[in-house]
Amino acid sequence: SPPVKKSAPQSSDPCKNCREVIDKVKERYSQPWKKQEDNYQKFRSQLNGKCNGFDKAIITQANTPVGKELRFNGEKKRILKVTPEIFSIFAKEHPFSNKTLNTCAVVGNGGILTNSSCGNIIDSAQFIIRCNLPPLGNGYEKHVGIKTDLVTANPSILVEKYGALNGRRRPFVEGLRTYGNSLLLLPAFSYGHNTPVSLRAVFTIEDFKSSIRPVFFNPEYLQNLSIFWRSQGLKEARLSTGIIMASLALELCANVNLYGFWPFSNHPHSHHALTNHYYDDRKPKTKFHTMPAEFDFLLQLHSQGVLRLHLGDC
Ligand code: CDP
Image 1: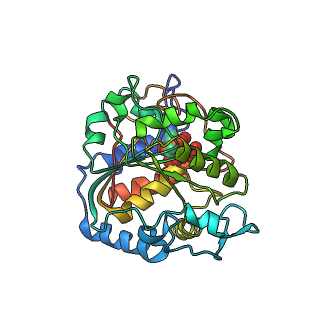
Image 2: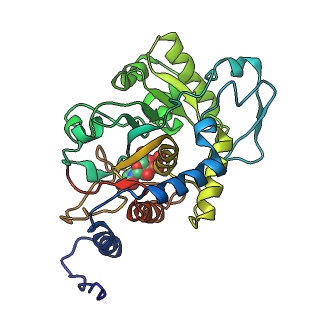
């Protein structure tokens, strides 16, 4: 087929950093999407073989006995030997269903979700994963949905939003209400400074009898996942929460749908300017992540029919 002719960028074009990506997306995203079962199975078994997120993504009493040395994935020299006290707050067994889930939605926090009307379709998934305690409700519901089965919390949010849980803890517990009895996934053993604040979160949840269920990322899984993505050609210091959750979803679910993944400043179709998040315009820490490089890989998986990226309005 003839090469796609690229139109010259116009001076009035507000899209500075995403013109090339938008062209690529137009090319790859224009075909109707169809799941390619063989590609999906192949990618899934690679992930499962190298990382085994199904059994290992979350620390459990089964995979992390007393005395085991946890090696922090962000700080290689730091090791924590599991004491009976820490062991007692680990999940008894992995919390995932033994049957492969049918449809999962992984919701990134991108501004592309603003006014997308994707709430209903997101909420119709069997398992819904969200990142970094995003605001739901308050008018966002229509565009991002409200149901949650698993939500991550970066300790930096606990520090910024809830005073690192050193003072009054009720606002934190109230903030968790929208997530019901979902799993709260904390990277407690990625960096040394994550551990005390994550433990305070767990104790607060217990003391206030909140129905959310705190669990910890297994640093060994995060390490293996980062080696896996590096072997695929993704060279970056730290994987973003979104690509971690998309990878886990590929092991847990037959049909993985991604929403809110678009790390560029303009909408792919209408080209209007976007905020970085659907709820604020805080910029990503480019020192650590290169979300556009991750996006390229996700777009490849979309083209291969392994997962489905949703970039349009619903
Ligand atoms: O944890 P992190 O700060 O990386 O993420 P976030 O800003 O809370 O957003 C959650 C995830 O959504 C990110 O990790 C990205 O994978 C994805 N995201 C995106 O693809 N495009 C954006 N504009 C913002 C977030």
